[in-house]
Amino acid sequence: MVRCSIIIPVYNCASLTRQCLNTLLAGYSGCVEIEIIVVDDASTDKTQQLLANFGDKIRAVTHTANTGFARACNDGAAVATGEYQIFLNNDTIPQGGWLESLVSYADSHPRAAIIGSKLLFPNDMIQHAGVVIGQDHNPHHLYAGFPANHPAVNKSRRFQIVSAACMLIRRQVFEQLGGFDTSFHNGYEDVDLCLRLDERGYEVHYCHESVLYHLGSVSRKGQSKEEKHNLRQYRSRWAHRVQPDDLRYYLEDGLLRINHQAQYPIHFSISPLLALADKDEYERGAQQLLNVRSRQVCDLLRETIRLMVHVQETELRQEFEEQKERETGADGKAVDREVASRQVGAAQTFRRVGTCSDPIESSDDVKLRAMLIDAHEQMLRRDEEILAAIYELQSRRAAMLKHHTDAVTRTSVADFLPSEYLSYRQLIRRIRKVVSGLLPPHVMVIVVSGGDDELLKLEGARGWHFPQTEDGTYTGYHPTNSAAAITHLEELRAKGGEFLLFPSTAFWWLDYYVEFRQYLETRYRVVVREEDTCVIVALREPAAERR
Image 1 (cartoon, helix red, strand yellow):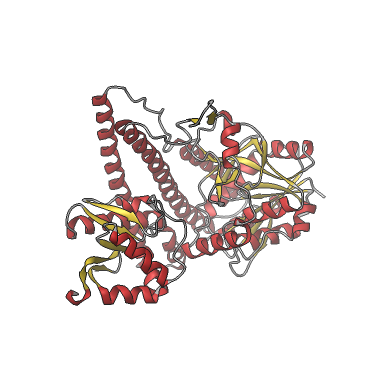
Image 2 (cartoon, rainbow, N blue to C red; image 1 turned 135 degrees about the vertical axis):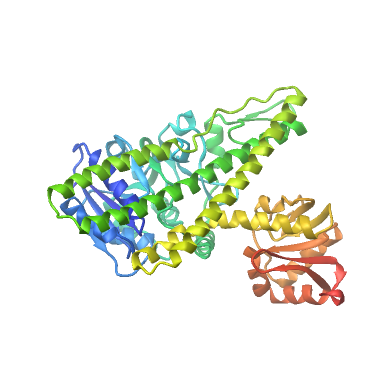
């Protein structure tokens, strides 16, 4: 029996798998006896050929059909012999000492059955430093986007949940729990496993000294239907049983302070890294723009990574084609060394891209703050142009590949299609263009938003969430039936709602809430119907005038 079994589930993205394995093997110190098990979940690219090239350095488990993350991990664990089992994503880049730190922590904390690592985005910002249960009873990555050297993320401690992108679990405990629940598909498997473990009295911990870069889950491209299914299943099983603990960490880390006075009101002190507090209009606007700017930098970084991965995939396919024409042996080994060197360079490139600059300190002078806001607005507009350009580049590349007859090339078309994120951003752009071009100025538009505030930022119009609470925020859930949807719509119409907008991502409403759709068709007029963008209903015009 070895000390640690490192189990890596993979599906396509062979270049990421090679990068991960090369980094693992190059950084292996020998202090901990390991075995590496790669579970190929029916990849359609060069993964099988790649794994064969590693020979006896790894053990390969091959699926004939794609089964998903949970089954792949369980099948890898079934053949593992290690005392500790470490589940590792293939889109991670382990840093020196990551493994030794995990094992040492497990040895010194016998009650910790699961231990998660610190995961960083390529720009050295936090991706994972433990997972908390928010006030909405959903899991959230704690301090995502914080700098890696912040004190709050550099303390090892107990959590309810940690990420399975890099997770150590004691073998006996994993077997007792029956492994990952395969009814989840590429999402929430780790959340469910940790919560089941907690119910049995075991502990889940986070080890900040075990550090890896995580390229943002580009290895498995989840579908929106799967995400919705996983969230529904999580909420039906756990939402009524878990206890929110996010505020406890904010208080413990000094990012939120409560100052009790002799009389109410209580005074709160909140770190600007954690949240935005109500201030004067200019400063609030500047902080909000900085916050949006930070999110967009991360989004652009993710899309840049995806493009770089696509390039690496193309290069890998070319290398294997060239390898067929060469003799194996010493030359092949030389190629492997060259490839490993190239991958290290690529990892360094990943870490350089998108590094955030130091925060800009706002001046008390109103004019300077106004200039700051204007500058950031210009940058945000430029970012939208960059996103549109990347979207166009990916679309054209995919269209070109469709004309190739080569089977290998055809399998790569899906990799070059624009991501769900970019497609969604372009949808928002189209919606804003439709609203500004076809609706009267300054109208109130009720938007079936799914809780996304970006959909409410309409050019020349004001947006409301549908459905919403009394204070205008998203309710967090859909109407129970058509009658509830109709009642709520009429309430918002009475408050001033003039148009109802369905983005294309919410067209399912018109099929699911049949009576609601019929109510709209018989009572109001559809003024915009663009199948790839949105449907807009005028709530002040009768259906008799429908075009």
